[in-house]
Length: 217
Image 1 (tube, rainbow, N blue to C red):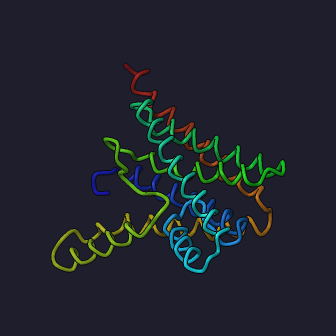
Image 2 (cartoon, rainbow, N blue to C red):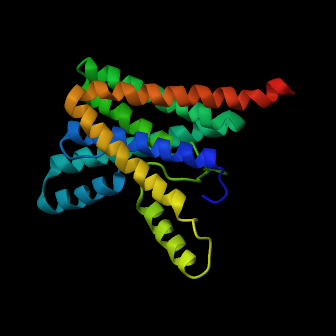
């Protein structure tokens, strides 16, 4: 993340918090399955297959498929939007989260959860570079590995603080998870509207900033 400005690092940490928030709501709603953490779901897939829990296997396969579809959708939107890709992807994510909240509120739980998973997949395209993910926002194993590598480098004469952004990403996801769980216990799935609103607000700000240079010119 050394190539990103502080503003970008802050945005990444904030979106990781959103991912943790939404994942906690989904985890509690689904009774132990994740809407953004596909590594955890993949472990559950293996365990479920070994133990013959085929309902669990079907659930995980559906979640993984939807997550990948969300990644594809986010990547396509980012490619099409060009310089305005961040605001476009964020708008897509906000729309999917709002759709999920609305569907679940109306009693269509499965469809609503599907929209949540699609949103989490799409979020990873916010920092897309040359078709690849520049910063993973919904999974932290890689961030923690990089933090450890940067700490090792700092201990041997390298940049003293290069590990900071990766720890910030992890902290954002963790804090978001705590907030999401607390909100769910108090408000139920209605807590998802807060995430949709927050992402929509960030999308609007990003769109405004992306248009400013063109207007100035």
